[in-house]
Length: 193
Image (cartoon, rainbow, N blue to C red; front, side, top):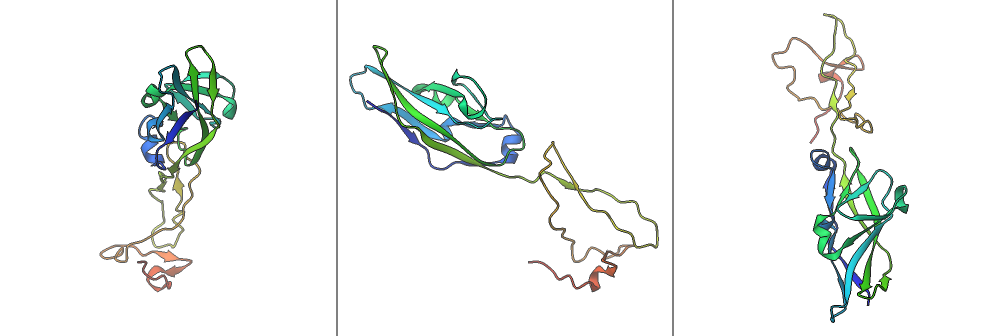
């Protein structure tokens, strides 16, 4: 008989959640159960996991084929799914796709591996970078602030997109901001919604 792998509905998390913890996604968030259709108790159901990209790893399952990247293979007993996690590299965001298959093993040692099926989850990016915190300027001269991104935690794939300045930034201030040499309030930059 085939072991049936029941997948959980699509799962997603954020880079910030993973980076603030153990970088682990519980397999139980992705797979509800693995079961054999056998009713006489002569079969044991396990699940085979493979195709996980380089940089990712698995805890709580037994590695049966070592190597690199997608050539690695792990197995886990159906009753131990809750003990297994996929370990995601620090600062990762994107889709994670790998393959699983149900395996039934008879009490006489014969086994049958079902077809591999795609399994995955999504890690949504979380911006961590901050803005350059200060600038040294000469009094009474218009000079660039040289705003830039300050990367955090080794996450260097972020870029500075837009800068928003409060409409009332200059109330009571002893300075004025300029955009391309024109005072900001006269530069034709309108408010955003």
